[in-house]
Image 1: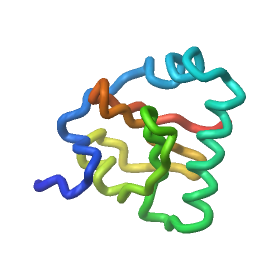
Image 2: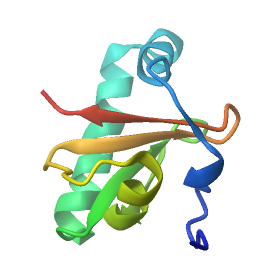
Image 3: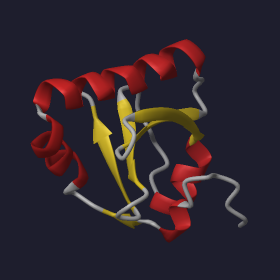
Image 4: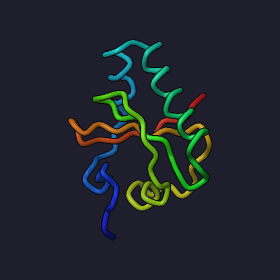
Amino acid sequence: MKNSSPFKLDECFLSNELWPNFINKIGFIKANLAIRQALDLQRMQGSTSTLPVLILETCGTALINSKAVKTYIGLSYLDQGMVLIFSSKLNAIQLLREN
């Protein structure tokens, strides 16, 4: 399957360290605010077929088709409150669920 996403999920590896390292780098309050902004984007412009993405290097947010996540990560059920954390520098992704 051709990956039309700019995130190139098929080339990324799964990590459990992106979120803790991000918190250590910018602090819990700012990291939590970045997640809130990604979730706000999902609520304002997303749909049931999108998932918010937090881009670590820029603290930017985007929406990605949840089918791409299913294809490359293997998760078929993505709940509300989930954010895909993406690092282009590390070529890694982590799926985070809001508490």
